[in-house]
Image (cartoon, rainbow, N blue to C red; front, side):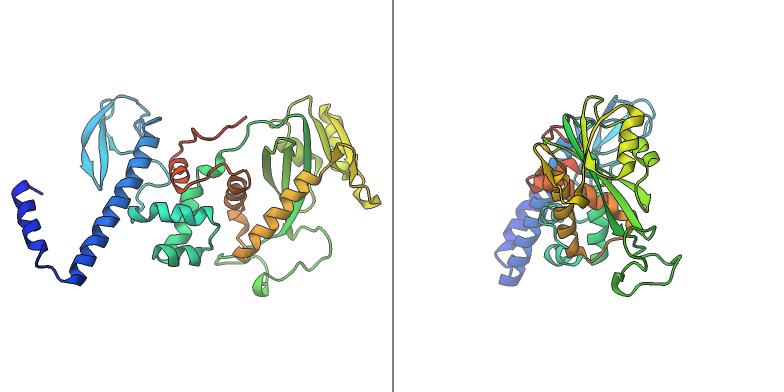
Length: 322
Protein backbone atom coordinates (compact mmCIF):
# COMPACT_ATOMS: atom_id res chain seq x y z
CA UNK A 1 0.00 0.00 0.00
CA UNK A 2 1.29 3.44 -0.91
CA UNK A 3 1.88 6.04 1.80
CA UNK A 4 -1.03 8.24 0.70
CA UNK A 5 -3.42 5.30 0.58
CA UNK A 6 -2.27 4.21 4.03
CA UNK A 7 -2.95 7.67 5.49
CA UNK A 8 -6.42 7.61 3.97
CA UNK A 9 -7.01 4.17 5.50
CA UNK A 10 -5.94 5.40 8.94
CA UNK A 11 -8.34 8.30 8.59
CA UNK A 12 -11.23 5.88 8.10
CA UNK A 13 -10.40 3.76 11.16
CA UNK A 14 -12.21 6.11 13.55
CA UNK A 15 -15.46 5.47 11.68
CA UNK A 16 -15.31 1.72 12.24
CA UNK A 17 -17.85 0.08 14.54
CA UNK A 18 -16.77 -1.91 17.57
CA UNK A 19 -17.28 -5.18 15.71
CA UNK A 20 -15.31 -3.93 12.71
CA UNK A 21 -12.43 -2.79 14.93
CA UNK A 22 -12.35 -6.22 16.59
CA UNK A 23 -12.25 -7.88 13.18
CA UNK A 24 -9.44 -5.55 12.07
CA UNK A 25 -7.49 -6.33 15.24
CA UNK A 26 -7.89 -10.08 14.70
CA UNK A 27 -6.71 -9.75 11.11
CA UNK A 28 -3.62 -7.83 12.19
CA UNK A 29 -2.87 -10.44 14.86
CA UNK A 30 -3.12 -13.21 12.27
CA UNK A 31 -0.75 -11.32 9.99
CA UNK A 32 1.75 -10.93 12.85
CA UNK A 33 1.56 -14.64 13.70
CA UNK A 34 2.03 -15.56 10.03
CA UNK A 35 5.05 -13.24 9.81
CA UNK A 36 6.53 -14.87 12.92
CA UNK A 37 6.08 -18.37 11.51
CA UNK A 38 7.52 -17.41 8.13
CA UNK A 39 10.50 -15.68 9.74
CA UNK A 40 11.23 -18.87 11.66
CA UNK A 41 11.12 -21.15 8.64
CA UNK A 42 13.11 -18.74 6.47
CA UNK A 43 15.88 -18.44 9.07
CA UNK A 44 15.90 -22.24 9.47
CA UNK A 45 15.94 -22.95 5.73
CA UNK A 46 18.71 -20.41 5.11
CA UNK A 47 21.24 -22.88 6.56
CA UNK A 48 20.82 -25.32 3.67
CA UNK A 49 18.99 -23.31 1.00
CA UNK A 50 19.66 -24.44 -2.57
CA UNK A 51 17.82 -24.84 -5.85
CA UNK A 52 15.34 -27.74 -5.59
CA UNK A 53 15.85 -28.64 -9.26
CA UNK A 54 19.65 -28.67 -9.68
CA UNK A 55 20.82 -28.31 -6.04
CA UNK A 56 22.91 -25.27 -6.96
CA UNK A 57 23.77 -22.82 -4.20
CA UNK A 58 24.01 -19.94 -6.68
CA UNK A 59 20.81 -17.87 -6.62
CA UNK A 60 19.59 -14.30 -6.24
CA UNK A 61 16.53 -12.65 -4.74
CA UNK A 62 13.50 -12.54 -7.01
CA UNK A 63 10.68 -10.66 -5.29
CA UNK A 64 8.17 -11.82 -2.70
CA UNK A 65 5.07 -14.01 -2.84
CA UNK A 66 2.69 -15.12 -0.07
CA UNK A 67 4.90 -13.46 2.54
CA UNK A 68 8.03 -15.38 1.51
CA UNK A 69 11.17 -14.20 -0.22
CA UNK A 70 11.53 -15.84 -3.63
CA UNK A 71 14.81 -16.73 -5.29
CA UNK A 72 15.91 -17.48 -8.83
CA UNK A 73 18.62 -20.06 -9.52
CA UNK A 74 21.40 -18.63 -11.69
CA UNK A 75 22.17 -22.09 -13.08
CA UNK A 76 18.78 -23.40 -14.26
CA UNK A 77 16.53 -20.35 -13.85
CA UNK A 78 14.01 -22.05 -11.56
CA UNK A 79 12.35 -19.85 -8.94
CA UNK A 80 11.79 -21.14 -5.43
CA UNK A 81 11.35 -20.10 -1.80
CA UNK A 82 12.38 -21.42 1.60
CA UNK A 83 9.54 -23.95 1.68
CA UNK A 84 10.06 -25.41 -1.81
CA UNK A 85 10.69 -29.17 -1.74
CA UNK A 86 9.94 -29.36 2.00
CA UNK A 87 6.90 -31.10 3.55
CA UNK A 88 5.58 -27.64 4.47
CA UNK A 89 5.29 -26.46 0.85
CA UNK A 90 1.83 -25.35 -0.30
CA UNK A 91 0.29 -25.42 3.18
CA UNK A 92 -2.08 -22.55 3.97
CA UNK A 93 -3.11 -20.75 7.20
CA UNK A 94 0.48 -19.96 8.12
CA UNK A 95 -0.70 -17.87 11.08
CA UNK A 96 -1.89 -21.13 12.68
CA UNK A 97 1.34 -23.08 12.30
CA UNK A 98 2.79 -22.25 15.71
CA UNK A 99 -0.49 -23.10 17.46
CA UNK A 100 -0.61 -26.41 15.63
CA UNK A 101 3.01 -27.15 16.55
CA UNK A 102 2.03 -26.65 20.18
CA UNK A 103 -0.83 -29.12 19.70
CA UNK A 104 1.68 -31.72 18.51
CA UNK A 105 3.86 -31.16 21.56
CA UNK A 106 0.75 -31.64 23.73
CA UNK A 107 -0.13 -34.88 21.85
CA UNK A 108 -3.59 -33.64 20.89
CA UNK A 109 -5.81 -35.89 18.82
CA UNK A 110 -6.72 -34.85 15.27
CA UNK A 111 -10.11 -33.47 16.29
CA UNK A 112 -8.86 -31.69 19.41
CA UNK A 113 -6.09 -29.98 17.44
CA UNK A 114 -8.58 -29.05 14.72
CA UNK A 115 -10.92 -27.48 17.28
CA UNK A 116 -8.14 -25.49 18.93
CA UNK A 117 -6.73 -24.17 15.64
CA UNK A 118 -10.15 -23.81 14.00
CA UNK A 119 -9.29 -25.93 10.98
CA UNK A 120 -10.99 -28.93 9.38
CA UNK A 121 -10.16 -32.33 10.85
CA UNK A 122 -8.82 -33.49 7.48
CA UNK A 123 -6.48 -30.50 7.44
CA UNK A 124 -5.41 -31.36 10.98
CA UNK A 125 -4.61 -34.94 9.96
CA UNK A 126 -2.65 -33.81 6.90
CA UNK A 127 -0.71 -31.22 8.91
CA UNK A 128 0.20 -33.81 11.55
CA UNK A 129 2.06 -35.94 9.01
CA UNK A 130 3.55 -32.96 7.17
CA UNK A 131 4.85 -31.32 10.36
CA UNK A 132 6.39 -34.59 11.59
CA UNK A 133 7.76 -35.79 8.26
CA UNK A 134 11.31 -34.52 8.90
CA UNK A 135 11.48 -34.37 12.73
CA UNK A 136 10.72 -38.10 12.95
CA UNK A 137 13.88 -38.85 10.92
CA UNK A 138 16.24 -37.25 13.45
CA UNK A 139 17.57 -40.32 15.21
CA UNK A 140 20.92 -41.36 16.69
CA UNK A 141 23.27 -42.87 14.14
CA UNK A 142 24.62 -45.57 16.45
CA UNK A 143 24.02 -47.11 19.86
CA UNK A 144 26.86 -47.65 22.32
CA UNK A 145 27.77 -49.52 25.49
CA UNK A 146 25.08 -51.72 27.02
CA UNK A 147 22.28 -51.85 24.46
CA UNK A 148 18.90 -53.38 25.24
CA UNK A 149 16.72 -54.80 22.48
CA UNK A 150 13.20 -56.14 22.64
CA UNK A 151 10.16 -56.22 20.43
CA UNK A 152 6.56 -55.20 20.96
CA UNK A 153 3.57 -56.25 18.89
CA UNK A 154 0.58 -54.26 17.71
CA UNK A 155 -2.45 -55.66 15.97
CA UNK A 156 -2.20 -54.87 12.26
CA UNK A 157 -4.59 -52.07 11.30
CA UNK A 158 -5.86 -51.12 7.87
CA UNK A 159 -7.70 -48.12 9.27
CA UNK A 160 -8.82 -45.84 6.44
CA UNK A 161 -8.24 -48.42 3.68
CA UNK A 162 -10.90 -48.60 1.00
CA UNK A 163 -10.36 -52.31 0.30
CA UNK A 164 -9.59 -54.68 3.17
CA UNK A 165 -7.79 -57.96 2.65
CA UNK A 166 -9.78 -59.51 5.51
CA UNK A 167 -13.20 -59.14 7.19
CA UNK A 168 -13.43 -55.85 9.11
CA UNK A 169 -12.99 -55.88 12.90
CA UNK A 170 -15.51 -53.91 14.94
CA UNK A 171 -13.73 -51.03 16.73
CA UNK A 172 -10.33 -52.54 16.02
CA UNK A 173 -11.29 -55.87 17.58
CA UNK A 174 -8.76 -58.47 18.66
CA UNK A 175 -6.59 -61.08 17.02
CA UNK A 176 -8.26 -64.38 16.20
CA UNK A 177 -5.24 -66.32 17.51
CA UNK A 178 -3.75 -66.25 20.98
CA UNK A 179 -0.19 -65.04 21.55
CA UNK A 180 2.08 -63.66 18.85
CA UNK A 181 0.82 -64.32 15.33
CA UNK A 182 1.04 -62.97 11.80
CA UNK A 183 -1.98 -60.79 12.57
CA UNK A 184 0.38 -58.57 14.56
CA UNK A 185 3.07 -56.16 13.46
CA UNK A 186 6.46 -56.45 15.14
CA UNK A 187 8.21 -53.26 16.29
CA UNK A 188 11.85 -53.85 17.25
CA UNK A 189 13.20 -51.29 19.74
CA UNK A 190 16.89 -50.94 20.63
CA UNK A 191 17.92 -48.54 23.38
CA UNK A 192 21.28 -47.90 25.04
CA UNK A 193 21.81 -46.74 28.60
CA UNK A 194 22.18 -43.08 27.57
CA UNK A 195 18.56 -43.12 26.33
CA UNK A 196 19.34 -43.11 22.61
CA UNK A 197 16.61 -45.15 20.94
CA UNK A 198 16.01 -46.68 17.52
CA UNK A 199 12.95 -48.57 16.35
CA UNK A 200 12.19 -50.66 13.28
CA UNK A 201 8.99 -52.15 11.91
CA UNK A 202 10.24 -55.60 10.93
CA UNK A 203 6.99 -57.01 9.53
CA UNK A 204 4.27 -59.36 10.67
CA UNK A 205 4.77 -62.11 13.21
CA UNK A 206 7.69 -62.94 15.52
CA UNK A 207 11.04 -61.30 14.87
CA UNK A 208 13.58 -63.50 13.08
CA UNK A 209 17.36 -63.68 12.93
CA UNK A 210 17.27 -62.48 9.31
CA UNK A 211 15.29 -59.38 10.30
CA UNK A 212 17.72 -58.62 13.13
CA UNK A 213 20.60 -58.88 10.65
CA UNK A 214 18.82 -56.49 8.33
CA UNK A 215 18.33 -53.70 10.87
CA UNK A 216 20.74 -53.87 13.80
CA UNK A 217 24.34 -54.32 12.53
CA UNK A 218 24.47 -50.85 10.94
CA UNK A 219 23.33 -49.02 14.07
CA UNK A 220 25.17 -50.74 16.94
CA UNK A 221 28.89 -50.71 17.70
CA UNK A 222 30.83 -53.95 17.47
CA UNK A 223 31.85 -53.70 21.12
CA UNK A 224 28.33 -53.30 22.56
CA UNK A 225 26.90 -55.71 25.07
CA UNK A 226 23.53 -56.69 23.66
CA UNK A 227 21.00 -57.49 26.38
CA UNK A 228 17.73 -59.17 25.38
CA UNK A 229 15.17 -61.64 26.63
CA UNK A 230 15.62 -65.35 26.00
CA UNK A 231 14.31 -65.25 22.42
CA UNK A 232 16.65 -67.55 20.47
CA UNK A 233 16.70 -65.22 17.44
CA UNK A 234 18.84 -62.73 19.38
CA UNK A 235 21.27 -65.43 20.49
CA UNK A 236 21.81 -66.72 16.96
CA UNK A 237 22.05 -63.18 15.59
CA UNK A 238 24.71 -62.18 18.15
CA UNK A 239 26.67 -65.37 17.49
CA UNK A 240 26.65 -64.88 13.71
CA UNK A 241 27.96 -61.31 13.77
CA UNK A 242 30.26 -61.71 16.77
CA UNK A 243 28.46 -59.58 19.36
CA UNK A 244 28.66 -59.98 23.13
CA UNK A 245 25.22 -61.04 24.28
CA UNK A 246 23.45 -61.63 27.58
CA UNK A 247 19.90 -62.93 27.86
CA UNK A 248 17.44 -62.42 30.71
CA UNK A 249 15.18 -65.41 31.35
CA UNK A 250 11.93 -63.57 31.99
CA UNK A 251 9.88 -66.77 31.93
CA UNK A 252 11.83 -67.97 34.97
CA UNK A 253 10.98 -64.79 36.84
CA UNK A 254 14.44 -63.22 36.40
CA UNK A 255 14.18 -59.55 35.51
CA UNK A 256 17.38 -57.96 36.81
CA UNK A 257 20.85 -59.47 37.18
CA UNK A 258 23.00 -56.55 38.36
CA UNK A 259 23.43 -54.22 35.39
CA UNK A 260 21.96 -56.83 33.07
CA UNK A 261 18.29 -56.13 32.40
CA UNK A 262 15.92 -54.85 29.72
CA UNK A 263 13.93 -52.58 32.01
CA UNK A 264 14.74 -49.43 30.00
CA UNK A 265 13.47 -50.73 26.69
CA UNK A 266 10.41 -52.31 28.30
CA UNK A 267 9.60 -49.03 30.04
CA UNK A 268 9.84 -47.32 26.64
CA UNK A 269 7.36 -49.89 25.26
CA UNK A 270 5.00 -49.16 28.14
CA UNK A 271 5.15 -45.38 27.66
CA UNK A 272 4.53 -45.78 23.92
CA UNK A 273 1.51 -48.04 24.42
CA UNK A 274 -0.03 -45.77 27.04
CA UNK A 275 0.52 -42.71 24.83
CA UNK A 276 -1.03 -44.44 21.81
CA UNK A 277 -4.32 -45.19 23.55
CA UNK A 278 -5.54 -41.62 23.04
CA UNK A 279 -5.57 -42.11 19.25
CA UNK A 280 -7.87 -45.17 19.36
CA UNK A 281 -5.74 -47.11 16.89
CA UNK A 282 -3.65 -45.93 13.96
CA UNK A 283 -3.14 -47.43 10.52
CA UNK A 284 -0.07 -49.66 10.34
CA UNK A 285 1.39 -47.70 7.42
CA UNK A 286 1.37 -44.57 9.63
CA UNK A 287 3.25 -46.24 12.49
CA UNK A 288 6.67 -44.73 11.54
CA UNK A 289 5.24 -41.25 12.06
CA UNK A 290 3.87 -42.10 15.50
CA UNK A 291 7.09 -43.85 16.53
CA UNK A 292 9.07 -40.77 15.50
CA UNK A 293 6.60 -38.47 17.24
CA UNK A 294 6.87 -40.44 20.47
CA UNK A 295 10.68 -40.38 20.27
CA UNK A 296 10.60 -36.58 19.98
CA UNK A 297 8.41 -36.28 23.07
CA UNK A 298 10.06 -39.00 25.14
CA UNK A 299 13.57 -37.62 24.65
CA UNK A 300 12.35 -33.99 24.97
CA UNK A 301 14.29 -33.23 21.80
CA UNK A 302 11.83 -30.50 20.83
CA UNK A 303 10.68 -28.31 23.69
CA UNK A 304 8.85 -25.43 21.99
CA UNK A 305 6.50 -24.82 19.04
CA UNK A 306 9.20 -22.64 17.45
CA UNK A 307 11.73 -25.47 17.62
CA UNK A 308 9.26 -27.94 16.12
CA UNK A 309 8.42 -25.56 13.28
CA UNK A 310 12.14 -25.13 12.51
CA UNK A 311 12.65 -28.88 12.52
CA UNK A 312 9.66 -29.30 10.19
CA UNK A 313 11.79 -27.75 7.41
CA UNK A 314 14.84 -29.80 8.33
CA UNK A 315 16.78 -27.55 10.72
CA UNK A 316 18.02 -29.52 13.74
CA UNK A 317 20.74 -27.29 15.29
CA UNK A 318 19.34 -27.89 18.78
CA UNK A 319 19.49 -31.67 18.44
CA UNK A 320 22.53 -33.61 19.64
CA UNK A 321 22.70 -36.75 17.54
CA UNK A 322 25.41 -39.33 18.20
